[in-house]
Image (cartoon, rainbow, N blue to C red):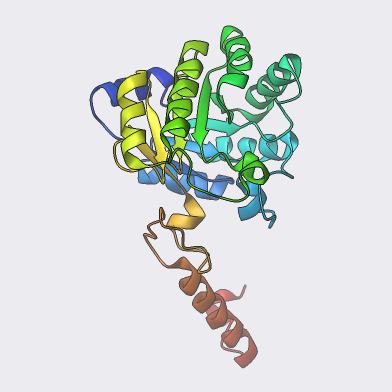
Length: 266
């Protein structure tokens, strides 16, 4: 019997007003550490395209990439609820492709649920997945796979028309069977309104404190990239400088002969 936090547990947390803590990570080592820290959920995000692979956006990420990293994360943790991202092109090409991709991600990646971006146009795909027994987390607002359509990473839902469309999309996804919804890059009042309206947990990123929980990329909250400083991000450490200093100290001691000592030699 799995000891992982379930979709039902996340729903109970939201109902009871207990905030859900989610982080995005991509490997077994970090998965073990965030498990020890007590997070509720881990997202193996297609943001790995930028964080791990060095791309400018998430578009090049493949389903095989996400499956590979999901397997690694699944081996590294035992308690957090585990969600895998369906990357661009894995579900937009038809209902059969969407269901096949979601099934592969669960079966081969070891995740408990999948996440997909988009609203009403993907409600039928969500319904197909949930009917097949695949839990689905939705994602609305600033959806990174649509970066070219948006013309960049821009806040969404600012106008009344855009806000109403987002609320409509959220209701469509809930009716299709999602158990949770990521709200990214939208005004805080709108996120709070959606959270109160839809009856499933919402996970915010750049959407204010009115959501049921929050998600940040682990590398971002650890401050591993001193060039990345968006408004929504709080850095809880400065590992960029600490890693540079540590590796620099290692390099210096190798060059001076101070490392390895007899203590570090067999």
